[in-house]
Length: 134
Image (cartoon, rainbow, N blue to C red; front, side, top):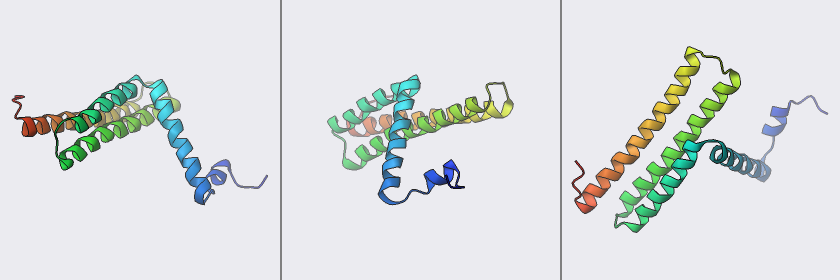
């Protein structure tokens, strides 16, 4: 074996093999999040419904793109939140102020992403259908 570390060996891949490996890691991450995180599963199903509605309802292309973007953003933020929680829990399960701050910040980011998603949906429905939501 050479003197390269495992990390160097894995990062040393180039070209198509690097892309294939990265796609596999991404698939593994999505699969693990879906399998182990109920919040992620709930968001996946919520956003499947919302993306389908974005195509079913009579929205213009810009509105449709914005709504789909917001759906994907909420999933992306939940993946980051899951990663933060896993990293903090791996480091230590002891109560620590910095660990709490990290987890709370991830949760707050997800709350803002969902607030954005809801706000964009309300604004889009109000604009397109004149729904009196307030």
